[in-house]
Amino acid sequence: MKRSITGLLLGVMLLPLLALANSPPSTHEFMLDNGLKLIVIEDHKASLVHSHLWYRIGSNQEGPGQTGLSHALEHMLFNGSSKLCPSESDQILQSLGGSQNATTLNDATLYFHTVPPHALGVSFEVLADQMSTALLSASQWKGEREVVKNERSESSEHHPIKRALEIPRRLALPASASGNPVIGWRHDLDRLQADDLKHWYHRWYAPNNAVLIVTGDVHPQQAKQLAERYFGPIARLPLPYSPAPIELTAPGERTIRQYLPQQIPMLYMAFNVPSLRTQVDPLTAQALELIAEMLAGANSSLLKAQLIRHEGLASAVTAHYQAVSLGDELFNISALPELEKAGSMETVRARILAIIESLKTAAPSLEDLERARIQITARRVFDQDALENRALTVGFLEMAGLSWRSEQTRLDALKSITPQDIQRTAQTFLVADRLTTSYALPEETPHD
Ligand SMILES: [Zn+2]
Image (cartoon, rainbow, N blue to C red; front, side, top):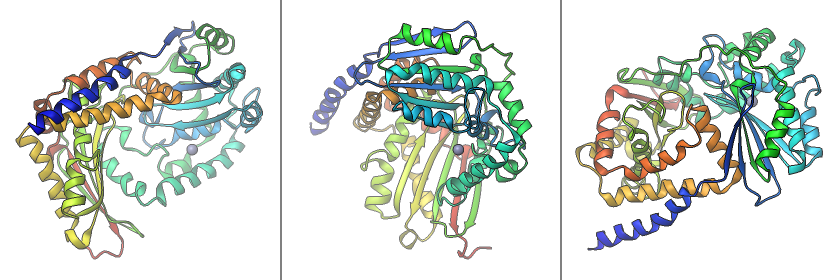
């Protein structure tokens, strides 16, 4: 009886959240003659506008020996163009009460501005100038290369968690460029030349390879007119063929052991899985998202409750799966083992695999599934409350080759997953043939 009441309550709690999630924001899409896609999300709650310019180019398209090229180019876009001296865009936007930033990802490079509504034209003028006339001088690259290498030191080589994940990710994704670090390998950065950056820029920085997303206190027609004014004169380019990063489905069980200076003992496990874009069964991605939540979402989740609370074998456990992606993905689990209690990393790994096995031998209870569903839905609804996050969600979907309209399909799929779908998905994808295990240990640990 208690169980059914809880189930009912969970269902009642879920309804308003799903209703909120179902109310579509006022979103408008335009296509300029030169192929630039403009998406405007109108929301007059605050007197601010976010303009995000996404390019469909990231580390996944980089060939051997050229890792880090997209990220290096992102840096160089701030180092001068026909209307802007190096770093001048920062000063211009700040003087207008705005700000800017940029980031490079596996599938995309993103430039984002936040400005007061009256400065949207300036934002577009800056972004359009960077799109079409970046200088990319050899002398500027000489200095910027050191900035990028320093960023690599701080964000990867001296970061106790990220550095432990770099090589295992390469091992986990053997057939595509997705396994390379976005920032690039250090030896590639050393040999990257300004001409390589120019070639990359002229190949990919074109209006027909970009999506401009504008959110906030703006009227769609006004955004369209400004976009036509500033981006309209830029010519479209013939774009090279760019295949999505597809992986081997079951490359075999892989294990790596790294002994690193001052490393925190860390266990990382990654299963080769499809994304929302590459899945064959339309429910796989949502089922994997729910499994990640059931394993290590809330403190009551399976791995957190067992490993941390009941058995004391780990001080932290996470499970993460990125469903929205252009190519195949990884289902990631990481843990910080309590070695005094566990004795070895292998013990913790065995316990994690046993808990995953329990999802395969019996379907989870509907109650556990509903709890995970509510948590994911609540997070999405609250995330979308922030205008900037709404723009980012649209951008991620577009870069994965999925329309922003597919968010609704995604929510519908999430609602329809059954306990048997969870069991079947775990049986299919969370298997040894798809698993990479990484043990990162401090270098003073005895080893063969
Ligand atoms: Zn950077």
